[in-house]
Each structure stands twice: as structure tokens, then as C-alpha cells.
Image (cartoon, rainbow, N blue to C red; front, side):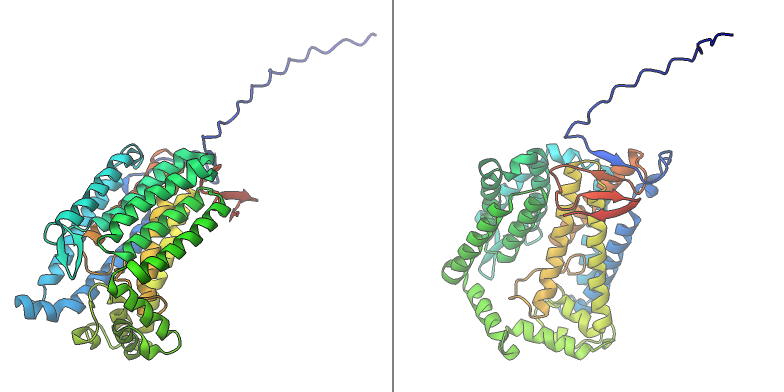
Amino acid sequence: MTDQPLNLPESPAPRPVRATPRSAPRFVATEAAGEKRRGFLGTLDSTLLVIVGVLLAIGLMMVYSTTFDWSYQTYGNQSTIFLKHLRNALIGAALMIILTFVDYRIWRRLAVIILLMTIGALVAVLLFGDDTFGARRALINGSFQPGELAELTIVVYMAAWLSSRRMQVRSLTNGLLPFAVLVSIVSGLVLLQPDISTAATILVVGSIMFFLAGADLVHMSVAGVLVAVVGVIWVTNFGPDYAQGRLDSYLNSVTDVTQADYHVQQAIIAFSNGGLTGLGLGQGKQKFANLPAPHTDSIFAVIGEELGLLGATLVVALYVALVVRGLRLARRAVDNFGALLVAGLTIWIALKALLNIAVMTAMVPPTGAPLPFISFGGSSLVVLMSATGLMLSVGRVRALEGLPKRATVERRNVLAYLKPNREDGQERESV
């Protein structure tokens, strides 16, 4: 009997492998791909909402504590100034909800228009702004400060510009020089007001975003040294008189805290009075006559006096949690623009909080920066709430596109220093 050949079915031809374009992000799913789309509340980042909500609640509580006496003496009602802050918070909340609904990717197309409008507002405040204590920083009877808007605008524009540059950010002519010109124009207009802290915030946040986009470290190091030298020369020779005075008092306080700026000394006294648990809400003494601007610049010192070290630590912990959540949202964004946008907004908020806390603890010279979400303010609070809406929109777009909840995005060139990787099902960061 001879062997008969077996008639096996032919295996199907292999399917062609298509290369993934460099510009297209690759999604690495970590949960079941069949996850269903969630409702509106399910598409929101609840962790970020809770963090911001608690900060706003603390802010409302502390603004009332720091203004009830001032409000009664000025208006005959303890709540008048507090109600203004509450109104600003509600306006900010409305904008936050609107921006959460709007697909954040539309702002990439409008970034140039927003930048030009902001530059126009910065020029207008120099020409027609309210002159207060020798500075022009506000329009419309002090209700609108273009400098606050410029901080948000630079983040949006830099995210749009850097996400389109890709490897060109490492180029001197196509990367560093255009970046330097852009940041110099915006920060220079703010310096003319003068507003040193806002100009420095714009410069630092833009530089960090440029770094995250994969900029050449040698170029950035040289540019950083030049900016530092020019900044010192400007402050000591051409800047406003108060800047030189604050710098001198800070340098003297390094060796003798009694030589610190009056503002800083009063903040230190407030922290000393508070101890571990504080004097109790509304029971602080420094806010009545000694501590300058207790409802804005010095509100963290009031927290330390009335809520003690525990209350101040809680506030710091909330900002740390916000940073961690923001960077996680950036890593999981569906595109490079969203990743840079959330990273930039997170860094901006963190820098403003760090600057305020550092001033109140005598770590840096006084700057006049408000504490995000907590200090009394109109433009500042509304702009910060708008930024929160943009961050929520990035997370919501991801959820609407049906991505698994914990999927990460692998990118090239953008967020080079925060690129997520997966090993054995565990997330890690690579540098």
C-alpha cells in the first residue's frame, strides 16, 4: 500500500503589515478593549474635580475669614467682599463647564488668534490701563488683568506650536530662536507694566514646556545663563525701585531673618502664632493690621495662623496631588497637543502655588503672586478655572473616543522626558 499525500487546507496568506506613521500615537491598552463609553459624569476626571473643589472650598472659607472685618468697615456688611469672590468663583465655574464640553483641539487652530488678542490687551493696558501704585496692570476699573490671561495664552500657544514642530525644536533657527522671540515679546510687555512675577512665570513655564517637547539641553543651558545674567542686570539697574529693595532685603535675610522684608516678617509671625493646629478659623490676629494683603498675597500665612501646620500641610498636599494628576492626564492624552497642554497648565498652576508659598516662608524675595484657587481675585481665579476646564476636556475627549480607562499613549519627540512605557503590565516613567 503506497502512501497517499494528505490534502491539507492551504494556510491563508499573511496579512500585510502597515507601518505606523511617526505622527500617529500608538495606544497601549491595559484593560479590556470592550469598555463601553460612559455618560457625561463618567467622562470627567473626578480626582481632578475633587482636588480643585477642595481648594476652592478652602479659598472661600479663608477669603471670608480675611475680609469680614474689612468688608464691615467699608460697606457695613461682613459678606460684601466675600460675595464678590463667590461671584468670581461662579463665573469661573461656568467657564470651566463650557470649556469641558468643548473639544480642546479647537484651541489649536485658534491659538494664533488668541495670542494676537492677548498681545493687543497687553498693549492696551500700557496705554489705557488703571494706574495703581505706579503700575498699569488692569483694565475696566481693575476687573481685568491681561497679565493673568497672558499666562494661560502662552501655555495654549506653546502647546500648539511645539506639537507641530516635532524634531525642529532641537534646531537653533527653527526651535530656540522663534521660541525666544515669542516669549520675549509677551514677557517684555508684562515687564513694562511692571509685573516681574508674571513675566517670570511666563518665561519659566514656556521654558519647561520647551524642555518637555525635546529641546536641545545645551541650547537651553546657554540661554538660561544669558537670561539669568540679563535679569539680574535689569533688576539692579533698570527695574522698578521696589524690586531692588526686595532683592536687598532678601539677601540680608539669608543670614539674619530680622532683616527680611516687612511682609515676610509678618508672615513668619503668623506661622509662629499658629503652631501645629492653629488658633482657629477666623481667630487670627495678623490679618487685621499687620499682614499686608491677607486676602491675596498673604493668604497662606493666614492659613498657617488659623489652621496651623496641619492646615498648611493639607494645602501643600492638595497641590502635590494636582500636579501628579495633571501629569498623569498629560501622559494619557490622545495627541501631542493635549499632552503638552495639560503638562503646561499643570506646571503653571504648580509654579504659582510654589512661588506664593516660597515667599511666605522667606525662601524667595516677595513677588505678589496669588495662591491658585484660594486667594481672592477676579482675573486670576477665572483664568485658573478656565485652565481646569481645558484639562478636563483633554480627559473627556479621551473617554469619548472609547479608550480603556488606564491606557497610556506612546509618543515620539513630544513629552520626551515624560514618555510612558509598559513593562510586565506596570507603568513606569523613562528619562
